[in-house]
Image 1 (cartoon, rainbow, N blue to C red):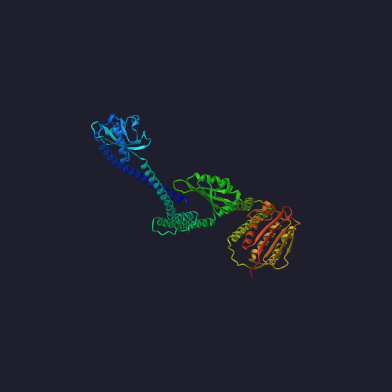
Image 2 (cartoon, one colour):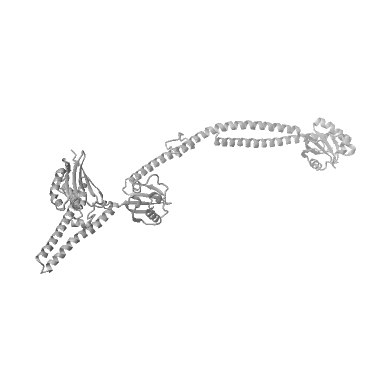
Length: 589
């Protein structure tokens, strides 16, 4: 049995016991009162008959034998004990006590029924008799004489108590039968009553476990049916809201994961509750982040300080952070508490904007302005200085004048080359080249570059070797290919000493064309290799300027190769030479 059934059975059993006890007690009390009234009436009738038998005999010691004899005869007729008492309480006759022992009986003047009878009324009393040792019911009436005697009748209550005991036994038996019936009825009633409740409990438990498709099958014809309808409606509403929240969460997650910005959300306690895919990518975060501190997740003290400041601030906190833990990325981090309105803060959200490329471009721009100013200042200063000398010096010799003019011409040429390279680089970066790409044989272009560079290498005493055994076609502009090879070969010549060697190799496979320029020059350090494709960057600035270089050749090469969907790499060792390798896809047939 369930606890509810036990409770219901206990209530019914208790109710039955209470009804039986109360009704039995009331019935016994009523029965006792009724029996007492009947006994009193019967005894009073018998007492009046005894009084008629006594007649006018005075109640005194002298008449005791006659009175005792009357009492004995009256007992056989009345069936009760009869006692005759004078007005002083002395017993002068008793049907149950021999005449010889009457003197031993104590005085009855203090008996309540005797006092009432002496006073002239009918007296009754129930008590244990000291003479016979049993519980008796006493009734006393005044005698008919003028001496004030009392006639008392006593009835033994043992029979009546036996009747009451039998009544109580029947009542107990009836109560036991009623109790068993109540138990059986309670089991049946509780099973029928609690069956819908058990179903309601099972369905409610299933809903609490998340089974929102479970429904109660009770029809709404009573209160339980109404409750079942409410539970079904509640389950449907919970299902609808959970589906709605799930869709919103999935949409929000999709939006957050699709953002190019990193998003980190903290709760009111400063613990991470959400990190989108972008922030995970920025900081290399793996595994779950919920419940961890920001310092554990991003491992950046500056970010942790910014978030701590935002948690205490009522306004947005913004800062540029260069993160060491994410490959040197630069972030613009904006953090703000939410909700923004007044009230208790429920969390903080931080958005990480990756401005690494912008920072790099700003640095490149600053370097470009500084380098371009420096590169332009030298030839301009030289031209201006020698021009002032020529203008102000009237007695210069023809030889000095020609020398100054040669210097002015050389710097003007260098200045022109610099401007030309800057315009060329700007045109390449802006992809404003007008001619269309075509099939170009790199091997043929390499032969042209070799012929054009023959005089340069011969004047510097450097061996130049071409290795282009077979045609190697690319889809490009012929001028771009020629400029790539010319700049790479010229760069190799500038950094190779007399007696050195420069080799240009051209080859092709099924998918790519390879152009390799290798020299035995001074080489490039590992630190410089990462920057040689920047504008105006020189490994040996004085040597490059002496050779007439502008510092833009490799930057132009990098952009031309990128426009051809190719790749350029460099490998070098100080004092042993440098190898530039350009790889360009072959034309798609």
